[in-house]
Image (cartoon, rainbow, N blue to C red; front, side, top):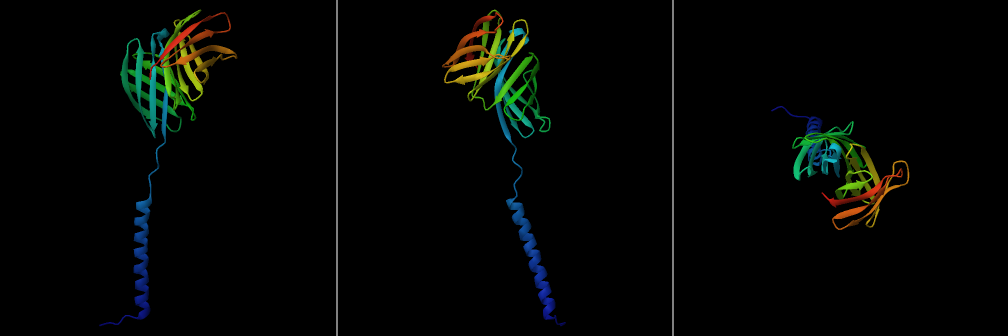
Length: 219
């Protein structure tokens, strides 16, 4: 039998040891490696349009590039639809549909998602990240239409559509149950009070138009 030099046996042992270490290292890396976790963004908001004939609440959950959600229609008739679609992580554009309604909007990367609705009904929507309550209602007086908003912590965000088709962005605050909506050009557009599942108050557009508003929680 051919003899093997001690140094040769040492090199072979070292090579075997390194191979074992490499395999163990690879296995450990495989076991401990984790896939990137998709960011989950939850938003809730309101929808209105069609010259004040279209109103409801909407919610979206964005997980990676997928979107799921729910659309609760208040007017012209009560109904609830499941939404699904996609989210572009580069442009932050969302597209979701269900029940014949198509939602297309853009997330600002921080707290707001705004866009349009088309299909069975047409209008606009605005949703806030982690919003807790949404109210759907109407306003009357010097002008009339639908008036919807969501409460996001101490913030209030929504929109109104007049019976003539004018869309008005709503933004304000809530302190306790006292609601204040600001005018786009400064000053106060509306004030009111939340009470249980309802809310109501008065509005003044600063140019002669005044009236009342009322709403009921719709999410």
